[in-house]
Image 1 (cartoon, rainbow, N blue to C red):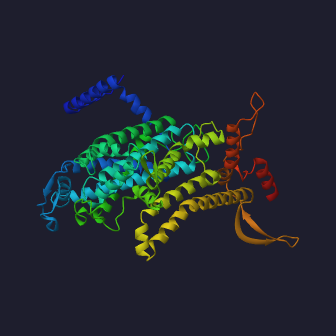
Image 2: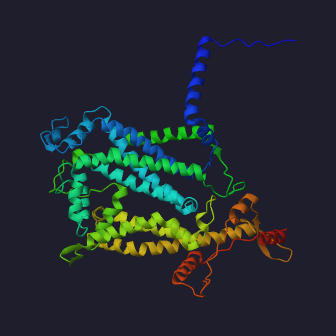
Amino acid sequence: MSTTVTPPPTQNQSGSSRFTSAAANYIDERTKIGVAVKEFGRKVFPDHWSFLLGEVALYSFVVILLSGTFLTLFFQASMAEVFYTGPYVPMKGVEMSVAMASTLDISFSVRGGLLMRHVHHWAALLFVASIGLHMLRIFFTGAFRKPRELNWVIGFVLFVLAMAEGFTGYSLPDDVLSGNGLRIIDGIIKAVPVVGTWMSFLFFGGEFPGTDIVGRLYMLHIMLLPAMVILFVALHLAFVVIHKHTQYPGPGKTQQNVVGFPVLPVYAAKAGGFFFIVFGVIMLIASFVGINPIWNYGPYDPSPVSAGTQPDWYIGFADGMLRLIPPGWETEWFGYTWSWNMLVPIIIMVGFLIVVAIYPFIEAWVTGDKREHHILDRPRNAPTRTAIGAAGVTFYAVMWAGASSDLMATHFQLAMEGVIHTLQALLILGPIVAYQVAKRICLALQKKDRSIALHGYESGRIVRLPGGEFVEVHKPVTDYERWELVSYHDYEPMMLRPNDDGRIPLSKRLRAGMSRWFFENRIVPPTQKELDQERHDGH
């Protein structure tokens, strides 16, 4: 009998292995982290480019945290008045707040400070933009349906928090641009009847601009809002793991089976590489494209208002809505002045945001669909939803364009009143036209898909039959392509049925009417019988 003797490991290897094993066992016995890592590592993520939009948002937020930590080391959030003595010669001797002086020092005295300002700003812009695009992808593909309605609300809250984070950071340098932005916020708050003045005093710590508004915004910007963003990001990711990922229709993809790559090791490696790509792109943009040159504007003074200034793009819709409301809408009621030219934009914007937040519940109520959905819709197969999204995007775009009404007028040499009146008309008519056009396009694409599924693609080859008839030869579709074209379900409007008393309540009539509107002009996908018949006729 022979035995194989394995040489013992070296002392260093043995000690290192024992220490690593003991440490791992110690942590696992007290936290059960091994179970969590094993469970999370088996999660499968679909491999489609549109799912990367959420990752861009996450990685942008990481860049924001890294660059923001650097800037926090040098920024001083104080409104005490000082005279600038830094290296930027045009500003020497100018009286300004400590906040603006420290921002100038970061830009011109701290090594890499201006680059970090650019990185922080561009990462914030990309963060908001990627969240917006991610929500549009979710909306148009129906990924918000049961059981993911709550995750949609969490994502919407993240979008609002991202805008708040951007605005508070935009206001910290205490220059002319940020000061005028705060002045607009002050006017909006004071327009609220009865309590508006007191709310402004509470927010600013006294009459605008207050004595320490920069310190208050700084606290929100680096503590409260980031903590809330981290909390909601964690909730969002937790629900993604719990509910599993949605996926586009295709062979082998079912409501229970997700086709893709596991987190460990494939997806984790790809995600790590993608993080450095996003980081690199942000650094590249920040290196070549400057932003927010506060030294050109000077410290905040209530008297000057720079011409041609614009807010960051994600706040533009609010500024544009204020510009598009006709002036002079004021009413004296109960001893208070009701400024409708301020209240109406607030009501419209808040109403728009609320509708976006609760849309999954509205659609579920209209359609009566209570099933779980893990397979995404092609936008063309949900024409009414797609048309609603197009109308909402158009409404937002017109409000956003209103913030640049003065630039459009000066650049194209147009009358300011003409630009405003055109945008006012588009604010009402634009969403209606966008809704109709988008729905017609979706229905036309459905008809085309039905024709391709039944008859195949047009090949452009004309042949003559024995009877003298000329026909075009169609190229048949593959089983995969046919499955994708006919796999969607054709839902029907809700039927009105009387209750136990033999009556039909008004709420049911309303719901049935909205259901008919949602499912009107349906294009029924070809049935298996029709496909078999067409295949037989083709042979």
